[in-house]
Image (cartoon, rainbow, N blue to C red; front, side):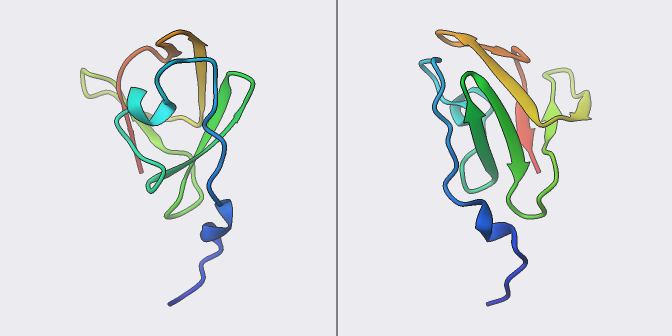
Length: 85
């Protein structure tokens, strides 16, 4: 196996006050993105390249985004969409 350095991201911390996880909210998994949450702010990083993931809105608009915020219960900012790398 090769070592690209990105495996060092580890398990991460996806704990926030929201009932749903950041992975559930944005249709992704810990195998795809690394979550580092402090308080209710989460910074996501792609595991395959160490870059910020792409947030895709329901209308198909895409933007690179790494910061996601739990507002409480099941409310997140941004409110909708998926995350991919």
